[in-house]
Length: 489
Image (cartoon, rainbow, N blue to C red; front, side, top):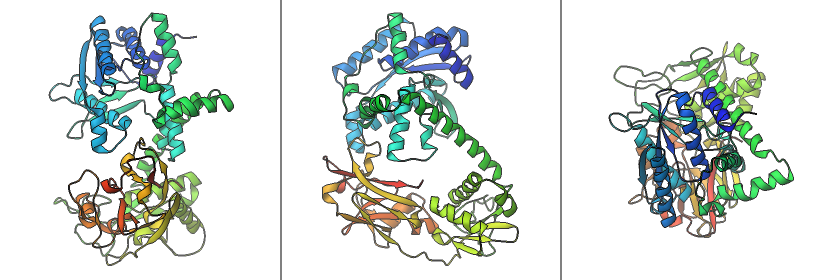
């Protein structure tokens, strides 16, 4: 059996996470996982030829305990003669200001520090930041996403490597996770064998946060009652999902321009229409275009390919297609009929040798829609291409800027498209604005803009896709409701 350093070396080489010449900043929090990562990379640096430093972010959440963690990590860096990069932030104040969970706030501030290290002006301080996410972290993430609802992309969980971009959107470094295949308990045993101390975060034992409840309550229950290897199975599932999505992304890129063509409608004018394909001219004018799919190719492909190509065209064209839409299109392609109506005035047509996505006439005006959403409950909204779900929530939800105070809501909400004159006051903004202006600021245009969904309680708009909820309706106590869009049903 290979030793833990040998196994980590194999992971690094297999996934090309680190190589000679890399300037690697190890993110060390003082916990067992990150201290073990540092000790493992210290063992491997001569063989792989990278340069190590220590990176620490003080979240200022636990007072003197956080300060003691900082001293511990600084001493560890000094003991091993490593450069020490540090920063700090008032996570609690940032979370309160943004109305997000402390976990989310901590991650945002910490990763912004990482980006600064990698993308520092001039020569970056490090070329890669290594974090100590483990197999246990992966399993927790996948299970949480399964519970909340996600597609195959979301089930990919934590990725082994993430590119970091600078202000000009150029890739300037990476965040890598060499321990995603290693159990937390193995890392603690490794540290014991070295006689290396670490510090326990006292908040890890609390069950206030969703992740801690999954870690302390749910996963142990599943392991005890159903499958002792549930952690490994969930981590394997995430790896399979990532591979599947990478494959499909490559396939979709190959379809575009080969079996999927973008063509200009006869009536299209060079104006400020939605861009789907190439720029119309050197002046930057944009065209809105139809899409056609080779009919013979489509019918020869398996169901999975048919679903993917239809969904991909819809995403590029801005047509909100849910699973039921895609299945209806597949049946239509096989059976009788000439034209199938799609959301936002689009049509799906059978042509001589092609299947066509045909844009609506420029004078097309979509009909208003309204659907009742019970609290709790869910409702499918074809015009928005998704299912809206209202469910009980806690204030530590990762998307807590979408959490509403249940006591202030009507029992039945209304999901509808916005109407002229509608106004909305998103949290963290100075004053209410017309919905039309909010969408203009976000560069939402055309038919997508006209069908943009809002949720109304009584006479008040309490939710708009893409915006934080109003301060007056945000949850401040235990009675909370979160609105979620599920496009995967």
